[in-house]
Image (cartoon, rainbow, N blue to C red; front, top):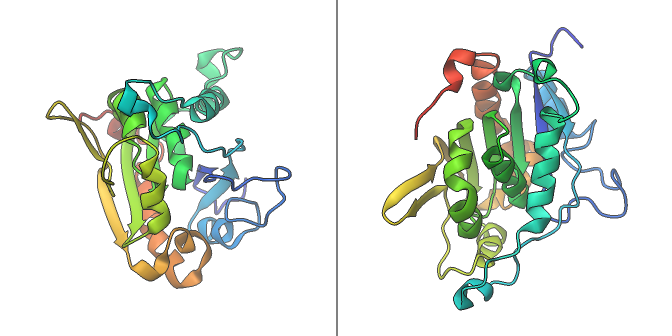
Length: 237
């Protein structure tokens, strides 16, 4: 590993980011992208998590009739993400330290990461960019997930129509912009920090456009400050 690299981060692409092959697009999560180079300059090595990037739970009408939403397109990748760091055929003594696991996701890529945390994957720092807030995911997995995520920093842009549209499929009326979820008046999931980007940043320019990418320095700092700090990992909601 290059001496400049101080931490490693796993990247989670958003919906339909991977089509026609694992690396068919020169997108932000691929090696050599402007994002990965920028992260490397800040001491982070990037490696992306390949998953089908399918849109789960699109049948927004189901909860209206008491039908549980089908989240399988996110739940299965979540199991695979957990397996990546906690392989069942490997002695846990050889798993990576929990405090060294960090994840950055775009859009619906947040859902497998959150579900993976609920299934037992401990993520020290989770960075979500333009993540649609899916109440069906948080209702089912939010409380367990939050206990296994050391620090959650979220970015979203003012009037990001794609982020808002992505939340419609959860069957709830209205759209929530930030991770601050309650069930029965009890808060079960809340991000630790929120950065609101200008409208012009849109749904994905933070990850592609040098005009805005500098704002990610905050995310990288949170990762580097917490990397390997086992004493900081324990948290309470």
